[in-house]
Length: 228
View 1 (cartoon, rainbow, N blue to C red):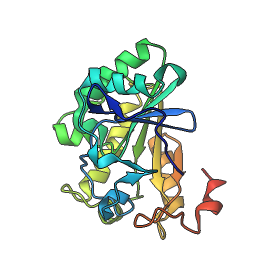
View 2: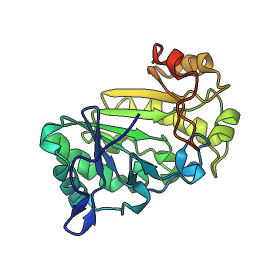
View 3: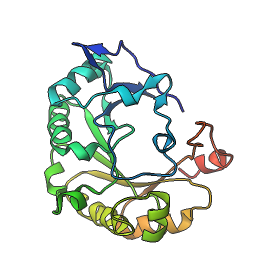
């Protein structure tokens, strides 16, 4: 997998936090995370994706983020996704505002999230997403809390996994499309992950595992692609 910028990075003196891949326009809202995932290149000091140093991207406000999207061809991309080497909902207000702006223009808006927004805010924030998103991918990443805490170390421990499951249940009432995702980390019980997703009432997408230190695909990627 590779990403590419489709326009110069500078916009009004700012770095453009937008890039495209396979017909989708991606928006990087923040570099900050709640998790310290073992499979994330950032955890291993790798911030450069296809020559783009995402560490240098600032936290743009809603208007600036829309401008960055416009610079890399927003008008030519129906599908826009909040993603990047950071957790978008750490800047929840920006995601909600930009999501509503883009949907009003006819774009399909997807959020890729750790599902911990309600845990961080100490209340159910799922209703806030109504009208701002068409689709949500929640990073489930494990079939149980103990495994989750090992794969995705975090300040909440195993309780974060329970919170992500609760978020999936809650967000289904407010966003039309909801999926759970896992990264095919070697040794992870994918069948148990599928069973959990089924119990939550959502499909599961298995994302291929790439060596976070080199960016090279793991040997099981080819066999997993047929199951995604």
